[in-house]
Image (tube, rainbow, N blue to C red; front, top):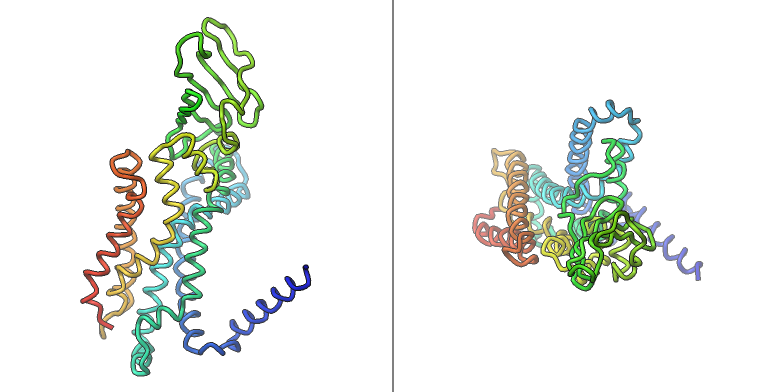
Length: 356
């Protein structure tokens, strides 16, 4: 069964190689040009964000690296593991800036004028580069829903090592209420403290469970020390609740189990963000499309400036609606959808100002 698989991979590799060298333009030189233009501008925007992130992270942790005598390699390892969570935010921004730079560059170089003279519409131009921005959209979904939570766990461990701390405060609230067992848990890095919400005599006054242990420790009413308590399977019905220290480190599939056994608006908002966050890039492009084509005596600064402002405003809207969703003021999915719908509204309002 491996022979057909290797033959398929070799065929795709040869096709990609011919395409990258300009020899695979059987689907059209126009699509080849549009795709490479979008990749080039997207890569330059993403590279700038990565360099900025590296400088900011090092400036923030340089003092702790020196004070705690931590090797620079540890910082590089931390930065690499922290890249997936950062890229989940940077990809939509690079998606917007790359598209705006690609369109404005073609407008200033008179390439767009030649395309219009040849009967090419703006919609066809954008659709021709779908294999570039479509891959980035799928990568964003994969990062947010898959790789970022896994990498965050490793990054948090290295971060604690750099700061020389046993634990750090997570961004989500460190409480887990399991109604099925009647226990309120306080989550820490490697252990949990449980407070049974039951009458005296029905349950111990205090529980402690270390991550990975088969049994917990319990303090009975009137007791003086911790003794062996209920098993972890009884205290945490789902395996996902026992594997990860917090919900933000849990895989997206496991986050469904967290939300099922311990419904919480903050975890619900996190789940919807992972599933719908990849739509931010395309919605930002639609909202800022009217700024992508500078005037005859203008440069690319207008498109770049508009993109940066739009990105900051969008992050502010996410913070505003996300805070309301986490506080249960609005449904969790509206906390994610509301900023995206506002972007689509702006795109409709600005449609009459689109001058190509």
